[in-house]
Each structure stands twice: as C-alpha cells, then as structure tokens.
Length: 113
Picture 1 (spheres, helix red, strand yellow):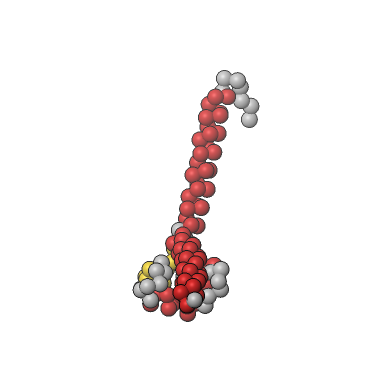
Picture 2: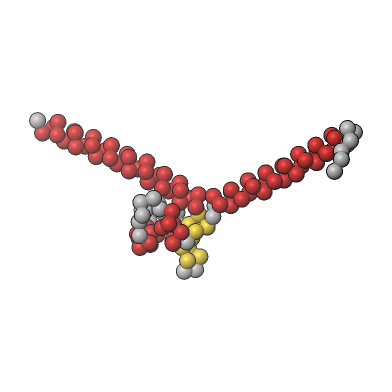
C-alpha cells in the first residue's frame, strides 16, 4: 500500500481510530475479568490462605462474615473484584486486631504492677 503525501493525514487519522478501537476492546476485557463471576471452586483456587470450600459455605451462612456473595438458585456467585476487596479488608482487620490485642496485653501487664 503506497500512501502519498496528501493522503498521509487521512491515513494517520484512520490508524488512530483503529488504535482507539483496539484499546477499547482490551480495556473491556480487563474490566470483565475484574468482575468475573466465580463459583466457590474458583474462590478456593484464588484464596491465598488455602481455606476449604466448606469454610466459604460457613461464611455465606454467617451474616457477620461480610463475605460478598450472591445466590442464584442453589448456586453461590462471587464477583472477583468484590472477593479481592474482601481479602484486603480482612488483611486490614487482622492487622488491627493484632495491634489491639498487643495493646490490651501491654495495658493489662502494666496495670498488674
């Protein structure tokens, strides 16, 4: 394909349009992966703590667990983005609990003296 000097601006504009379309498609794929609906088997695979599937069933039954799930008939569905946010929340809570526990131990030890 030979492009003349006069056709160059139009060709560049067309290439930008194609690049923009490709970027839109790729961005859409990453968003879909982020909000990928998952079953508990997939959740167990992605869980960094290696918890059992039965543990996640318990989380679904415990209203205090804050585990992000939805029920579709008899199926439990978890969005990947919500699961990852829940994991981060749990990590933050764990660090706070450890800090609070250390503080309470130190306070109880100083009050005994």
